Length: 79
Image (cartoon, rainbow, N blue to C red):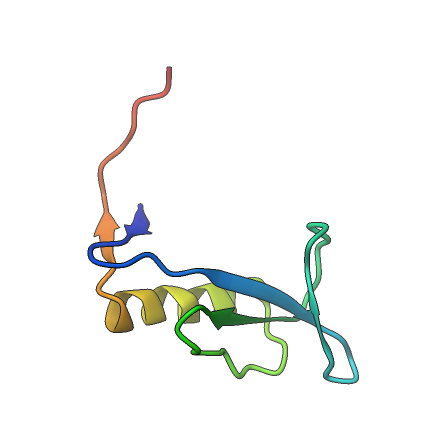
């Protein structure tokens, strides 16, 4: 199950948050325990560095409520 765009496609950028509160773009795919995100529409999470699962729920909620994304429940068959 995943969210799919209906009208517009947005871009979410993930940042890891250091202990001093500064944010860094995670371009290398490192695993961190503190995250925040920004959306191409200007929305930002304001967790101050939460676990990724928590921020992902905020992102999903934002996509669903503000950008009319819909849940795709279809299963794709493995080939």
